[in-house]
Image (cartoon, rainbow, N blue to C red; front, side, top):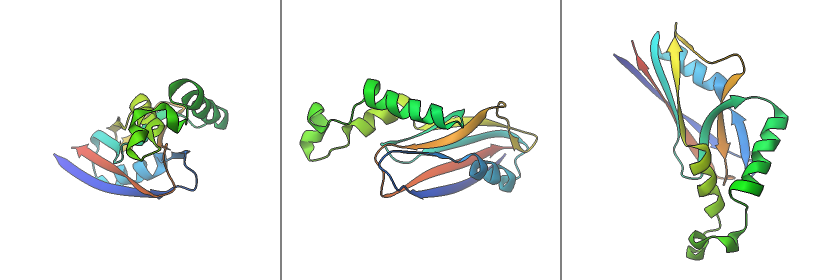
Length: 139
């Protein structure tokens, strides 16, 4: 079995941002020399997410609006976690809701995604250095 590990680093411009990382993940699959296996893509921060969905700006706006209005409004007074001096409880809840990692099949040395599927990094408490680990495992 082969394994390949790579870290992507981000320093987002906004507190919340969605970044398409599909091409970077595909590049690491290619570098791994794994023909059949899996690529694990995992946010290494508790206020970020990795997810698979469509690359469409209207959907991104819908996701951000859904997180803000339904899942976890950015209202520091609302959360007990913020009583510790933090103000990012909403980001923690958003990460829990979206999830912090995905596993994508690798078939024929390529990511085996559906026709509209892309891999995204979701930053919910940004404007500082963050990272994602890509681990490709297989034969």
